[in-house]
Image (tube, rainbow, N blue to C red):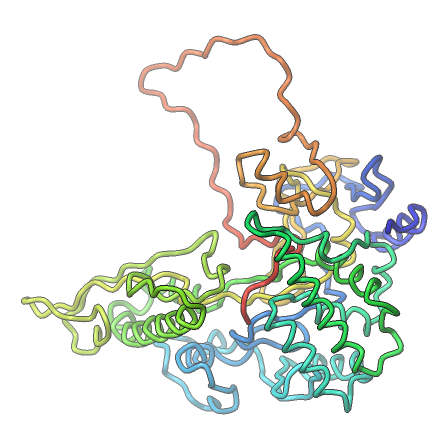
Length: 470
């Protein structure tokens, strides 16, 4: 179902009022977002809180409301090591991580509170806890049914189910302005046995709908068909909320010399234990899935493919003569008494990952040569940042897919579930041109290199295929 064009334009026009951007009718594309004034590369075009967001995996521990990482750096390391540490268990404990100074060791206060989604909820402030209580007060007393609903979503790998419930309860005015298609029309189908896959996701949707019926809510969709369209609209418009684990930045600094060899020697046994623990978990996951164990040739990424980061960092620390390091796997010593070099990657520190629906972002059209990109800086608050300079009147586009894919047909496959063929500058056939002679290059003069671009964690629309494990 397509929303009424005039109502849609009016809704998004009001959202952008008073900002440096505006929403207006875009021929053949519904609504589009345009710059009211010139912007420069790297400029923040807007910041936006989600209409509904959900942390998809429960580690690292983050605020239930705003997804800000909680506790101290020491606590987050303890949580990675044993998987069960709680912020209040680590109060007053210091010194796990060497060379941390003052406030840099603290990420955010951790306050225990109520949540309908889980029996152990933590918040970064009393304000976040109060907002959560107010927004979801209707679920008070219905926690077992809510948690059964969420557990099913996690089990079948569909984050859009809990986001749908959150958006319904918050009464977002965005929903009537979104294109609504059945959920099974919005997912990427596998090449092998797509019919069986469709039947499976329809079964998952039905089970979710039946669990939703157990909740006493006045705002529930009135039919399975309506629920399917709601989930489909979220599948097309929600984005992955993702930001790097703060321990990555600390490890980078140690790698570059912070704390000297002493810091590396103290960290190495912890990192070896962390690597071994992740390898053990990964092996258990593969065994449960009936897959062959890949052995010890990795640093233990689990079954979630999102652990394979676009900008994965690799570290190699030389062996040490100190007796404090190199106790675990790969930590043997040579004849000279030095431990083996220790190699690991940023996959030891999985990023925070969730999904969220954002009203203003939903008005942005797609381009395989996007002029803006989504950035998350330590919480669920979204920042839309200009990738290049734009003049007043230029359209602000994002990419719904991996725009770095060079093959046009592969990019279009990722867009098929959105129901359009991209006609951006990269997808249009090149104009016929006469063959030009290559310009001469003077001997010994190399062509100028393009300036390196800042590395950012990609945040693309939807994750239309089902999400990874929690």
